[in-house]
Length: 152
Image (cartoon, rainbow, N blue to C red; front, top):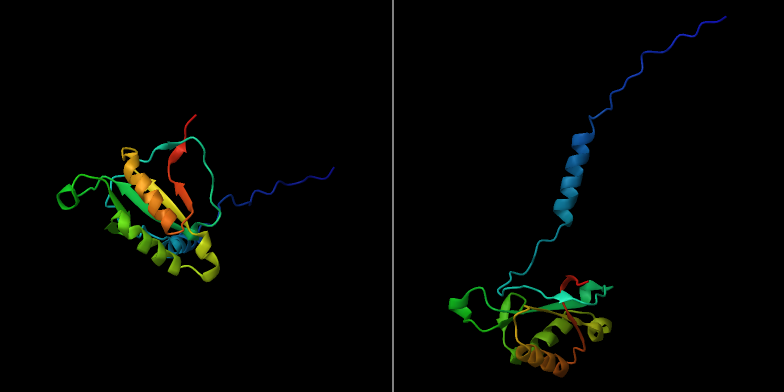
């Protein structure tokens, strides 16, 4: 009978010399591709919970309006304000703002602009109705109301 010898020279170590290179490549990738928040919120935001949710396909067509009680009450008072692009605006300025946002889009996408209204849950319906009226006047027909998770 022939005798078979068991090979005992197998290495069980995993080569880890390339691991730091991979980690630095991932770190640089995320540093280059990450977009930090561009706007500073001037209003308090406690978004309401939704009963129905719908995911949007093209987020580049969305412009954001924030409505809520101002964080700096000494500067803006205690009444809810509207914030668009880091600047508090009034309801009369919404028409001009929508037209500026439409100008930033291409000719074919101007009719598809969507306004995301991020309103604090404690804001009364009066300012929201005024904003809706001004958006209608500006021909911004697609309005979505931002919220947090779905209620069960």
